[in-house]
Amino acid sequence: MIRQTTSRGLWHSPVFVLIVAVLIISTAYGVRQSSGLFMRPITNDLGWGREALSLAFATQALMMGVGAPIAGYLADRWGGARTVALGGALFGLGIFMMSQSTTPLSMFVSAGLIAGLGLGGCGLSLLLAIVGQVAPEEKRSLWMGIVTASATGGQLLIVPVSQALLTEYDWVMTLLVLSVIAGLIVPMAFSLSAASAATTVKDREIGAGKALQEALRHRGFVLLVTGFFVCGFQVVFIAVHLPAYLAHIIHDRDQL
Image (cartoon, rainbow, N blue to C red; front, side, top):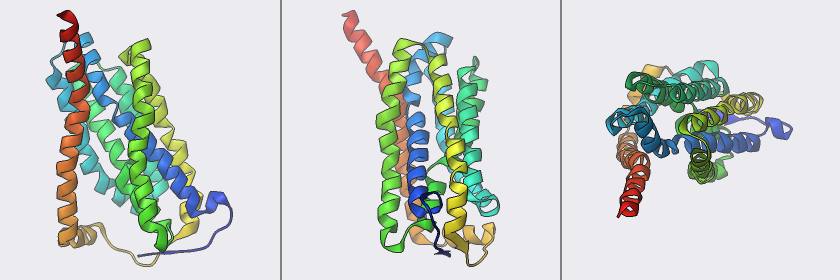
């Protein structure tokens, strides 16, 4: 249970937490949803079948889910800001290593394991928890809706930029630029430290095991997680494979 305390100045206010959370989620999900654009250029350039990159991106989605409760556990001990910063650093590192990958194994480790764990730390789960703690009670649902919607907003901004970079340069340079963009999550996360510390105070401690038991016994939580799993499976499948599929159709049409 979290109760709010008063603070002074924008940098120490709940509104600042909301603004930074929106920027972090927009950045993280904008970069993540650019993944499908790389399916065709990477597989063509490295001479792979699409199954190698598909496995890496599928693992990334699964590792996001695995990393989220780990991030929650770390946030309970280190604080949300430092945990989000760690997630952003891992995500940026994963994207950078992805740009240097030349084998399916290195792509699996970078784009799948490292980037996926990073996203678990700087994704919606932890940011929604942080915003939910500091938001005024009467505005909590609105603020959490704004943060969730910013994931789509990030796609609208960063995916076109990724496509433009791919058109102008190549997939290596594009991933390097995206790794820098992802790295911006780190300073943004650290900027949350003062605001989150000034606006939240813990009223009781609960261990990770106890929290997990309570969550698994809550029917609504189980149904929500199941729904998100099904939704995420479909969305990731479409985001990863649709761009390459459409490009293939256009290419075949132009050959006629």
